[in-house]
Length: 259
Image (cartoon, rainbow, N blue to C red; front, top):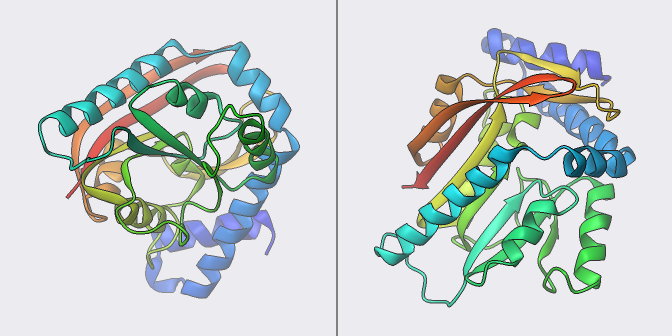
């Protein structure tokens, strides 16, 4: 299935679900995921340069908010954590910018999950150099983390990754990813999500030399309903705006709890 046909199939599933066939929708999602992963792999160095050279100040604030939320839940007994370090899974870890920051927190044991081969190679190099702990890089799709046991993490962070999966019926796409996030979280664990805001699905080139990637744009209600039906409460939901040279980008930030 080519990309244009895959987009049309996803739109059919979203707007006329009774007319969509599960197997066809699944094939469409695989096409879009593979295309996006290939784009990131081919442009992994360009992506790293773009994100390192133009940092968004809000990123640090959101990270601090996440750290404070998990630490508060542990200190008040809402998350059971007997270990000296709590475990964080960074889903869609990219070239490792953020997981490296988490590795500098004395009470955090971070793990990086990534499906784009170019980024996996970059993360593995960090692991080999000792900048990331041995065994902390997981090459997998966020929809199928079968190598990770249930209730393994105190926090799952999905920063600008979930929007590369469509919201469709049949427990596919974004629903599969959120179901897996809930499965690997301990009860009371914290989920962090940051997605692009808007409406609909499309292949988007953000004019940063990265090429076209699939995006599911989210409204607050779409994101909230996705999380609630997959076992999360919603504690914080905030709409944000980032100014880039290529144009303003709208975001939705959410913190949820595994219930």
